[in-house]
Structure formats: structure tokens, C-alpha cells
Length: 152
Image (tube, rainbow, N blue to C red; front, side, top):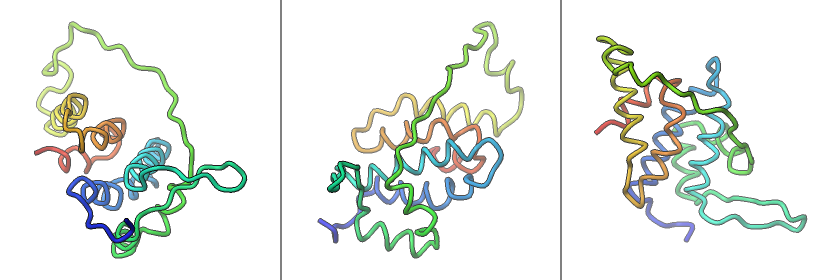
């Protein structure tokens, strides 16, 4: 239903996109991850894809989501990502198991917050919120404001 009331998860998605990922679109080395994150979070809001007459996938944001993004002055920036098909490619980094978090991060509170948020996103088990956290995980090391925002 277009006029549905947004769920707490949907409000979280709007806040993440509008307050964190849009600003990350302009950073060094972050743009691809931010674009992918916005695309995937908008997919959660849009629900099922519709196929147009040429067989292309088309996603429509609910009316409430369009209004929420307009109120934050980001709708024109995020709307195109509702129809993109970015794919993240990359290799997983293997880390030296002899290093502890203390060895790696010392007393850098920001790095500890990112690591905690990273682990929580990986272990998220809520049926409604887990997809949001998993989508945000790649952005944690690049978007300084996201880890503190996601932490309880």
C-alpha cells in the first residue's frame, strides 16, 4: 500500500540513506560502496520489482519514502538508485590471526566502534533489521558517522 505507515526498520533505512550514505557519495574510495548501499536499502523499501514492457526491472519507492527523502532534501540524489543494478566485487581480506583487536586498534575509540558495529552487523539476527545491518557493513570503515549511529 502506497500510504502505509513506515515501520521502525523503514525509518532506520531512511535515516541511514539520508544522513550517512548520501554524504559518503562524495568521499574518496567510498562512492561505489555508498551507491551500492543506497541501492540495496532502497530495494528493501520498494519491495518487489516490477518488470516494464522491455523486461527491465523497475522499483518504485512508497509514497511515504519519497516524502521522507524530500523532507531531507535528498530525494533527487537517491531516487535514481532505486533503478540501478550495481554489484559489489572484491576479495575478502584475510587478517593475521595472531593480532588481537588491541594490537590492531590500540586506544583508537573510532576503530573500536567500527569493529563493534562490524561484528554486530555480521551477527544481526532480527528478521526485519538484519538485512539493513548487512547492507551497511561494507560502509562502516569508510563512513565515519555510520558506526556510532548503528550502535545501540
